Length: 302
Image (cartoon, rainbow, N blue to C red; front, top):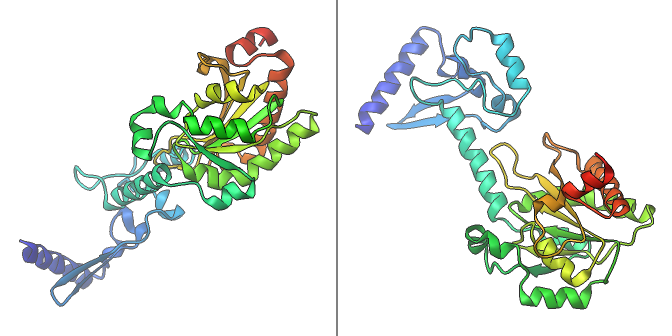
């Protein structure tokens, strides 16, 4: 069967060439510049990298009714529009791009934050109660609690009762920390100090989730806690960071008691430098009113 398919492909290519056409120039997928060759009984199909911008944003729909309108829609979103199809199936370029993006997502989830990133900001490392990445993914509850060893290390190394405690957490994307922390951290630290606020000893938490801030503040007793954490990666962006902020986090407090700035990334989200400035203003407001989350809106009259 495999030889039969190769022979059919070879005959089709030969026929196209007799008509003055090349396989790479046929159909709306011509932007991917595929090359099909038949060498000594072996079939070789060489497709261009589908992750390049020109390939990623190529319009692959056959004879669209409103090509201009479709292009406008595609330019307004990172959603997979205008991908077309090959009969009842997605095009090869579309499938390859999906697989490539999925691979990046897997790397972000299972990767580890580089030691160089942590060393650049003097972050020591502690762990949640999740003993490894697999348990972290299967048991979100363990990612919200500090291990006993982590509690002891934090108690020994951290300044107590600062105005603001900054924590960095890998969350669901190590890439978010590696790519965004170098830009956002200095803005936050300098902004808080310029506002006259004291900043505690920063540290890094591996296999952690947002609820950790409750456990952390039972030890540090800061007025406000800031968690810079990797977001769950999508199929378009895998390095987005979130900044969760809470006033006097304690066990029992939930997301309703926190504030959030999400989608911090240079790839279509809030720029890390701009987000850092927003975070500083948010924390100043939280400390001024002594509240965060829904309560902050009520107290501030928003």
